[in-house]
Length: 550
Image (cartoon, rainbow, N blue to C red; front, top):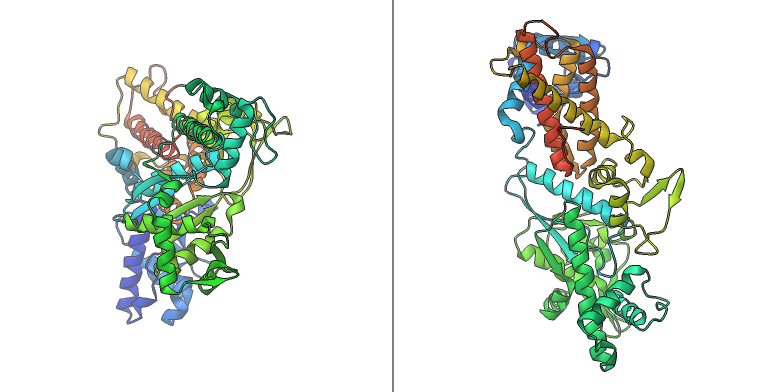
């Protein structure tokens, strides 16, 4: 019986208890919460449902809790239910009900934990979208890890997810990038507002290798050659780097295509026709304050050129025209104002602003020996994805970036994340999986398996702790999807690894010496197999490997 199974049983029991006494069943929330108490002596699970609904039902909370305890105790899978304090309910599961969690994991394997909360929902998940003017920096690297993990988690909850990269190949930053390449090709310093670093020199040389005559062309042709080859080169590097990081996109959408296709012009005309734009000081403004923004936004500047938001509006409308029910944007710390502006753009176009979600990620810093690492060997001014992977590896990099809420700035200690100790979170989790894999190999050598395991024998406190932790996984995964918080999965895996290590220290799994294998060994092997499966499932969702040997 998983926590969700228990919550469902509790809801049905509470509805029956209320109905039998002529009380209002509608006071029950749709989903009841059951939690593991901090003190295991209080039971396997606890709920405050009696305190939550008693007043609405017109009864005393403790009295309602007593009725619930009596009804639950008579239910299959419940060993006991006791009232505590003013109306808390402490519940203990029967051994066979706990064992059913292990059986469920072994039956569902890779599917264990998956749900259907988002079934039928078509989601566009846009993340990274780094400017094509240089390698991906740490902020973009964080979104690569978090975005890919979130896509996997949403898919596990039934969503049809399209991973999309918005390639900003239109605007002033491309002009600055082009000028920087030309300066490097001429052996001149980078422009004051341009880009520097060894990669700029390398790409300039690449342009000249492909077009030796580039610097001799008329200015307009020269600029186009450097722009075209330079953008293609950095984009190829970005794609390759992301792929090596385990991140691939379904769609690479080019911003410039919105202007070339006329989509921006059509979006602007649509807003003018609807009255959502007004003319002031020679510019066209979006009435975004009508939809919750802190100020109106310029869409077409007084010089006739489109402001950046014009492309955003056209891009959102393009996404909706492709049939997406939900458009999630994952943006950097300096894009906080985009939340209101993108929702306003959706509302102004007559769409539901709730089809837009914007997640803002905070800064990432690298630390070595207590000192900040500030300079990249290649990019010159920023630390890149390549730098991080070179320093600590793909697994540690992904895990380090995913395990904290994106609302928080994080410091990545290079010495910590390369250590082979339990202080290193990814090592701690992966080591648990490797240890479980070793047990499975040793069991196979002894001719032992999990077939026919009597899971009701798993009554040791540490066994119960591990089973209940395994049982939490579906709920953790559902909450991570609901709140768009992949870090919940990472923190859960660390809890599961710790619970397993404590179980391992307390319960002998394989027979020792001349000891004959018994039913308890088979049951514990089944429990180990379930723990290994869940660790593997969770690591897969984070894009981190689950090693069998370390």
